[in-house]
Image (tube, rainbow, N blue to C red; front, top):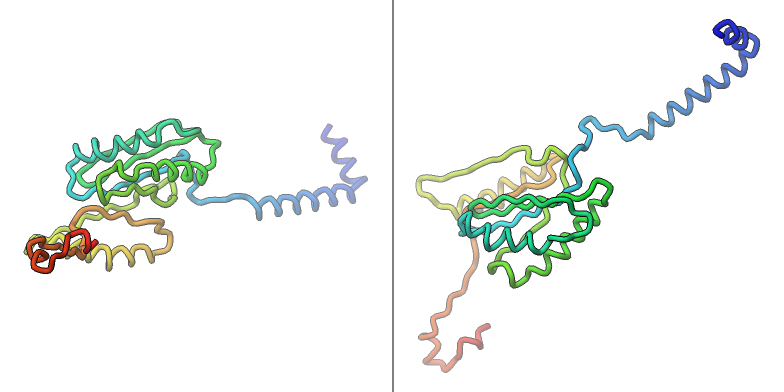
Length: 206
């Protein structure tokens, strides 16, 4: 068998060279178009819903936020399982879908269900499907504290306006999730007693 192959290669060397060139060209083409990845994606098709719930304890987050969202997204096409975590001020829900599903369609289905929660969740609480990231998920968790004096509003403003923009400017950072602290707001509080001399009802100021 080997001698026959050698005699054929010597006698028809032109065909052998042509086949070698074709194989080389095809191999080069496949190498250039191959989906190579240093860190291949091995995580399942999942959508992570994060809901910041300032001022709520972990028990309140579980009952008022997490359970409401889980009920809303239950029964979606292709969804395999739902896992959740409720901690003080934050609800995290991970919805896992079948492997052959389209992750962008999954996110669309989740977003459509989340819109039905308007008026169900406590006022000012909005669930958000976090941007897509790699299977490495959370890379780093940072905790900040301020003891003298304990000004949580100033600390949250520092994070939102200084630290977060710089972290998002780092190449490869998909998202930065922030929870905790006091969010600075501009509130107008009306004293109805001061409106009486002007005969102005409270609803005229809305």
